[in-house]
Image (cartoon, helix red, strand yellow):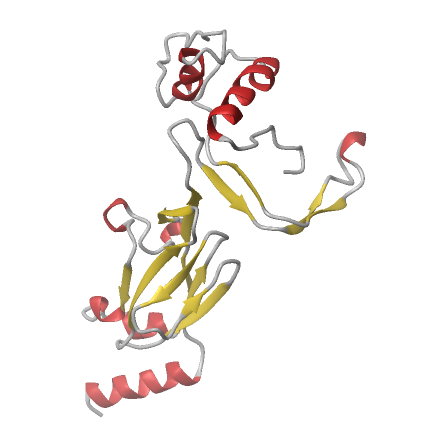
Length: 232
């Protein structure tokens, strides 16, 4: 039996049995579409695609909803997040198995139950003063512990009926210094030699953030920023 017939037999076995999977995970804030139109994955969905042969060739594009922008494809542990490197972090993202055609273990690999991921990051559009935000979808989770301190007991279900946005990163010196320059904040914190700019702000109090920074931020953006709750 020649190699062509052998490979055809392997492909047939892959199609009939298990195969490598690509999971497209789409958060709130946009949709993932494909060039062929075969696959469309909407916000809040996880779409699973079988990748079983050398003929898979698809280009995925992250399309943000109104009020959002596409930031990047998300990195996953173990290198299983496609298009998440610095060189391929933009949308669209092309995935095609023929790129690995010279790899001798390709067919046996495609026959495995390996799962890889493609996940866009959609971020709320803001302004110069606005912190980078990400939407957390509505849902439920278990909070607390039955074996920890009394304050943690018992484990209970916390539900959010509506989505909400939360800051992606810590507040920076640059953000705080803009508040000081605008007269909204009266305290210029010491960076203790670490530097300012995009570094997380330090030496500011809960009261200063609550009574100065947040009121100033809300007044210049027209938004309603606040501290998150413990469960949020």
